[in-house]
Image 1 (cartoon, rainbow, N blue to C red):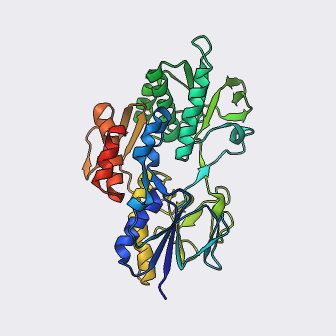
Image 2: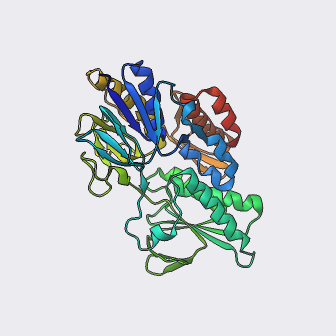
Image 3: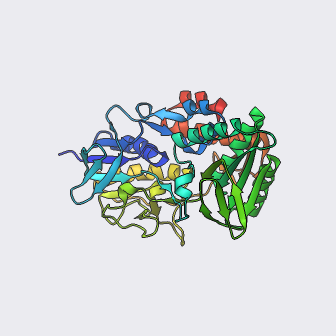
Length: 391
């Protein structure tokens, strides 16, 4: 009987693994791809939709343009993975059997038990989230005035928080809208744990866009009108966005594989195999072992790199061949702040850029090129060229 290989998720990890798996298998097994959306979202560009919703058409790629005709696609929400019976359970009560499974369903936002935060904050984990932020900001400034501007608070100054604040500033400036923007980070700097030179460059660009940065105190509580920061600071808000952390999806909470007790993310070895030899995991939903103390970072860059090896290893498992190990390679960071961008420590197309940290047109075009390269890798040059002007 032909083995059935099932891949969960259509993010960077899932879409990339499907391309790799199809190339490796050559029809030796059946492949089923499951996702709750029938498109792949270029998530690291989704923040663009906050300032310009029309960008959505350039950064959503239908799964039929990615997968081969021989791969079955099932659109559905995964509710559970039963490793004993080897079935994936879906919200419509249907089940998909598997012989080998790759879990790549991403993560959800972590709220860290902060009272009121989940009830009142927008998040940025999907296209609908980005469009929802756009609509909320527009509604808020339409009710505001120069003397009483709309108050937008962004919690968390990692990559998502910085890029969200930058896009809201871009929207404000494009429309001459009365909006005040505050970016709140509990640690002592934007992009915590980042290189100090990069942190400084990002802070400078945020401040140039009139984003008020508050660092060094954590959000402790939220109600329907106010964000309480530290012991003494109260920020009134019209729109609150939270980008402060990730945790595992509910769909895998009860799956019988070894998971981190706090984050519910799946432990996986460097070959992506879990403690169940038939189940593999990668991307944000997983803690993929790496040399040293830290797992692979939950970034698009890491998922992109890992997907090729993960797909090949699924094919190797089907053939009962030894699995390959994967080591993450940090190729640098490129961060958007509205139309501006900052790049740091970049290795691109096999070349190390000699300037450690830089901005300007080169950084902006580099970020576009990275997104276009990814789109080209899963669909081809036509879709990449179509998307380029709006990146």
